[in-house]
Length: 394
Image (cartoon, rainbow, N blue to C red):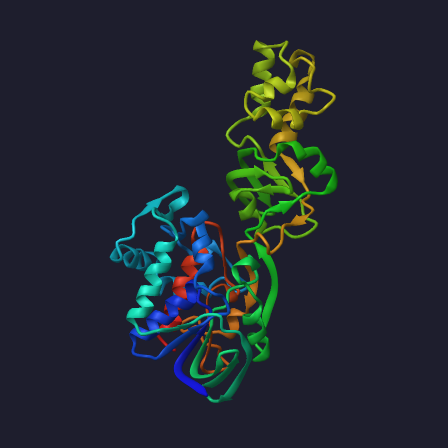
């Protein structure tokens, strides 16, 4: 038996649910299908379970893409303020954190409940545990999906399958496969907003630092981020590292300033004048966690009094801490990445409707598109904005 609806949305995540509820409000018959058991798994995981659902400051420069202008239309037509208004209308309490990030006070489940309630009100049908076996085009604006639940036909097919990040959440490459099937370019994929691993020598040297977090300025190329940095058993994490991972390429060095508020050379010179007998590692421990100070102090000078250090040696020590050059071994991969870099070529889509230019009736929204937001609620805002736009036209 064949089930026919106006719109089928593949993917019951942030972008897919937003698109479905908007299309349903317009009187379209909508079915959302997903292979997972429950909808919105990544929404529930977002923001450590408190859903960093948007940011007060959303601009195109917060996104990476081969077409940096593509996101502007969607972000302006359904802005962070529009989503905030929806959240308020549902009585969801939220708080502002650093850098304008907005989080749910009561947990991520409240955002998912809101989206599902809006979908129910709009008459959207939700089909979970639905595996897609094949997608075919029946003609102009007509598609058929062969699934383990039967055959579904629609006039508008929306691909909201997300990327490859966090496979435990149900991530798959289906959306990219559909794009390639219809001869739409997919830019190379890579894990983003992801911890970095260390080379064997550095891993051995820094092994005892796992669990230490410091405020740091981390640089790669022309980009720098000042945020907490976390030492882990595998390497480096924390917001500063996740942000820089969007810039880093294998083989590149990153620069780390472990004391961005301080001129360490001047500080050590002052300590040398007032506490000449203080050991170098003890002097560094005045500003850095004790274990970190012990590791960052050059072994040959760590235990000698400051008075025995020359000005050149003091400068060398300060440079090693404030201009620390490190070549990561790699990333932790999609297992812990928050997003997927690359994706469906924006130039193949309409920035107004998210429809494929060469395939009428086929739409791509959310993370599957070559739009990657920085850390701070930007990726969910792209999901809301792109989903809203497609929902006005499907």
